[in-house]
Image (cartoon, rainbow, N blue to C red; front, side, top):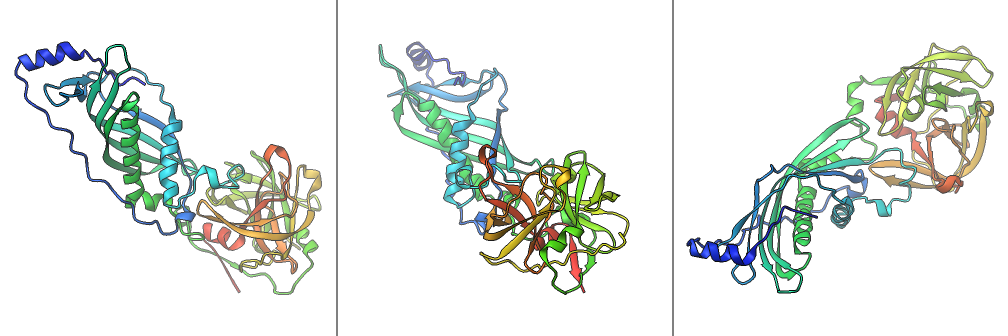
Length: 422
């Protein structure tokens, strides 16, 4: 790593002393920040450091330097050299993850479902607006240089949501770090130490916390754009789980094919946002082969749910919904169109394994067999009521594990601002 450091210790020191330069004091560091505990830290979205840029001008003074014993006697300026840097983000990412983990925020190392997680992480951009440094250099004859001193970074953090495709927050921090002892890699240590202190300041910022921490099951910002939609509840009579296949559909879009199911007699169908993709119109196919044109009227990519509207179908009964949380060990049945359109109406059986909370979103975990194409289909209980929507399968190396994820139906309705009444 080069920070434009060009040192000529002995000659410049003598020249400065002869010129009568004054003493320079050590850099005063900004006060350290101690983040308070984060409420609902486990419901926060995961952060991924995506890019790092320095905004210093070519020739800008970024620090001062002096010899080891006379560091503050006649220091000389250090000038930034604006050249393309090849920054290794791995160390900076590790620092950010370490500090986030201290507050209980989710990091890449402890998320079992990271591979199949549909929600996506928030991307973090780091723009370093200014660097202030004081370097004291020990330059033994025939040996490596070592450095101590202070460094202060002024950073603008940009938090980007790839699902909404926009910046959701900008946060400014300023923090520094001091080395009392000399190290051969002292400049790197100062840079990483100052970055860590800025990361801590970011994690303590209220605007940042509001951007990354969500209340599980609460309406998302996307949901506020739609007026409330009220669906009339289906009949209360239990029905065999196999009957759900008559109300399940295959959904064909520009993104491929998936599954869905009828939730109202007016022609509303629920599925996944990733099933409809960016399509405005999709084809809906019933298990008897009849088809209808559907319009995608609501979609929330973060919760990965979407609502399709078709003309009111004749002779099709909407599925009943059970908004209460299921119990572990309860029998469940997945309905959908796995792998190929020829397998529409496939029903598989399993049990509820657990309820998970990851990146601010609730999921029901089950060992019921699902495959690509099942996405958007219903997960029903033994009374034929929908309790969740199929969304993901944990399959490292394309090998089924019996670990599959489903969106609780209550959370799906909340994300789309849908209410169910009698």
